[in-house]
Every structure is written in structure tokens, then in C-alpha cells.
Length: 356
Image 1: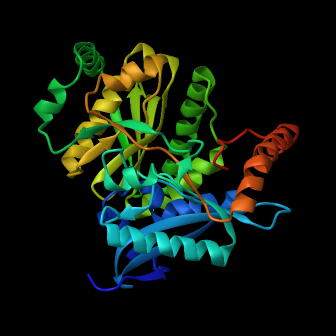
Image 2: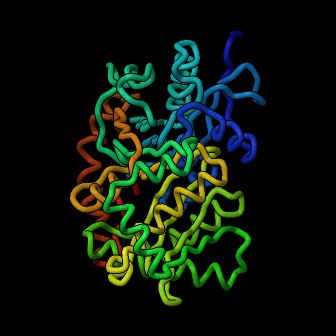
């Protein structure tokens, strides 16, 4: 391989084409994810290395955020870097490019969060100094289904109770509705409102935090036109009673958000909904279905019942780029986060997860 050059990609299609075909690819590295995070104060830079700017071999969408008063920035690579980073030469070139970006952008600390395990060359590199463990942002482990298997094999992987509940929901007349970018504006608006109604109620019951509706509406507007988002509903007696929001990255599908009403839980509509999502994406020709995280309690048992393989990643890792500022930020950021949350409470706004 000839000497690798570092460059910033400014073409959406070129960047997404690279990400979707790259090793370690994941939807938060798509161009649209950077756009989604911009209203929260993150500025995306799509950094790549390769022999030619038209053919990157590895890269990282780095989200940059300024720290008030201190004048330095944080850098975060959500579910990245991606590409041929198991190649030592490629990894060295990309790491050098990231350090150079750090100097230009005054980045004190760079956080990465790839889909790498401790058995991968990239994972082993990130577990060694000078990298250190960081607070998690994306799920550190998940369950992935191999959609190259036959439908009969996938169904056979369902636990007995799960197959029974899927069959019961089918017999009871539960249907599954798919929404994509082809839907008209009014239909989409109603569907997103129903999604949020179900998801927010689920969040309140389960004890996690839902973002404001505009976040999911913006995600749909950004991802759906390129075929990179799908919204599914289970419908019972004309009412939407369960929902799933998926992101699509090339051959991979990730189930990012989901929920159900009390009626949906009672009718087992959520079991049929997830099974039909798995079956439908397999029919589309997708290669894998990511359940996006391993929860605890009943949610964990629910996900486990659909089969698949557990994948445990090395988790978020920090690279200090400016030691004095990195140390100062580690002390200042927790206090800053507490102050931000207090301010939002006083404003009466719903809190958002910590990566904001």
C-alpha cells in the first residue's frame, strides 16, 4: 500500500458510500447522524485516510463540541472509527490524522466508541495505553441476528413462548404496518405522533428518558429520504399499539427505539412486530439485525427470546490529546453537566441523554 493521505470528505454520497461498505460500519457514522446532532451543539467533521480522496480506506465522523469558558473542544466518534482499521498501517495513518485534527481544532480529549471487541485488532489497540476507559454513550454490548439464515432457521431460534406469542398475535388479527419515505406528509406526521405517544409512555413506565418529539421527527426527515430509516407499527382493531424505529446502514439494520401500549403488551403485539421486522428486513436482503443493546430484567429476556449472538464491545475509550486541558475537563465536565440539567429542569424541558 502506498503512503496514505488524510483528507476531509465534504460530499454526503461519497461519505455514506464509504461507511456503508466499510468494516465496523454503523449508522451513527452516517452523514445524517452528524446533521442530527448539530442542533445540540456538535459540529461534524468527516475525516478519512486513503491513497486517493475518492477511495477512503478508513475514517471517522468526529463530532466536535466547544466547552464554555475553557475555549477547548471535545471530540467524539460515535460508533467509530470505521474501515480497514485492523491493518496496522491504516490504523497508524488514521490515528495520526486524528491527532492532527486535534491540534487544528484544539481538541483536549477524543472519545471513540467502535463496534470492536477485545478479540479484534482495533479493540486490542484501544484497550492499551494511552487510551483509557470512558463513560459509555452507545450500548457496550448487543445481540445481533444473522439474516443470511433462512426464515425457518430464524423462526426455530425463537424461544417456545416467543413462537407461541407470535402465533397468538397473528391469530388474533394483529397486523404490521411499515412506513418509509414514500408516505405522504400527512401520513408521516400522524405516524410520528403515534410513535412518540407510544414511545414516551413506554419510557415513563420503564424508567428511561425520551427526547423531545422534534428529535425523532428530525431523525426521520434526515434518514428516511435515503432509505436509511423505517418505522413499524403493530395495529390492533385499527389502533397502533406497538412501534419500532430502525436505522439502516448498508446491509445492517439497527432497532434504535421501540415501545408498546398496555393493550399491545396484553395482546403480545410487540412479539409479532419484532418478528415481522426481522422477517421483513431479511426479505429486503439485509445481512444482520441489531437489537441495539442488552437491557436488564424483562426487556433482556424479551430480546434474548429472538435468538442471535451476543456481541460485547470494548466500550467507549478516551484519548487525551492535551494533558493539562484533558485533566481540567475531567474535573469540570461533571459539574457542567449537573448545571445544564438543573437549567433544563427550571425551563421545564424534558431531559435528554448524557451524550448531549
